[in-house]
Image 1 (cartoon, rainbow, N blue to C red):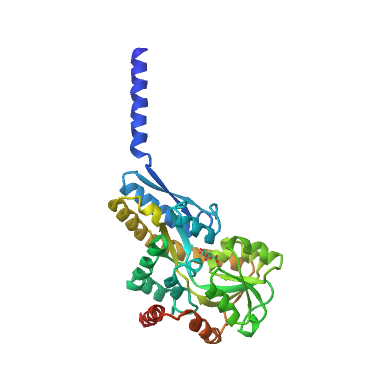
Image 2: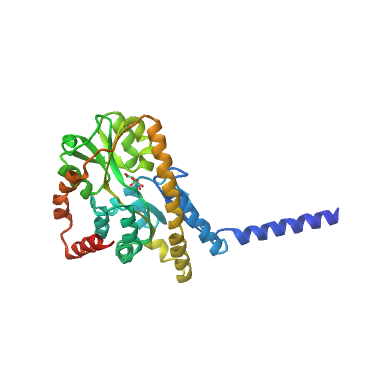
Length: 326
Ligand code: GTR
């Protein structure tokens, strides 16, 4: 009996020790608007796994997906104050806060996804990551956001003229509002989470996004026309709250940065696969996909957007360097 007691006691003590050894001293709270399984969500989970391994279980990441912590614009504010530690968002909602993010949110600024990768993986990308810091964020890594195209519930859009008078939701950034106005449409800035019912009830006619978001949000169920005009390639960003960052040792900061960087190739593979799967799902659902679009008139209409938003020497220089990257 005594032996049993001693053995049980020993086992319990070992279990408790094992638990202490693996228990996270710090759990970083991370926000994402997308559902579980979405490439960005999985990439941040992967980053967390790497970080946990590399800090011997001291630092962990918990991803709150599906906008559990709020819509992007609100979570960006909460991140500034350290209520949220990590945040994976589009660059769009950062435009009005960090002006350098505007240059990679301009319509048709990238020639394609490969061009975007080249720019974001190089010195311009580094400069943009650094630009977050004075605003209370630490830029950690860029993720893919594919090409964004228009979808709506009214008619197949084939030309710029077809955009006239259409009520289209955009992300909450002045660039996108001006982009729609330049195309003759009525822009409605609105949080992502409100778009489905806004299309369904006819508050708006449509919106614009990439294949995975069009599919995972269910917008394809209420907007039956998708025009592949690919007006935007907006990279996504993973930021950390500067307030949370400052609490870490230099060594742990380096570990966070490295784990974030190492999640990028994983994200890109997941993204490629998801784009294909989402396209298949949307096509199978019977959405009319308009591919015979002449992009030139859409591009030509963007001059006024560049004139209005690319005003400082800093932004002019960045845009010129993006265009010169090949
Ligand atoms: C998605 C992006 C989200 C969000 C959304 C939107 O493509 O991944 O971060 O910005 O678009 O349109 O609001």
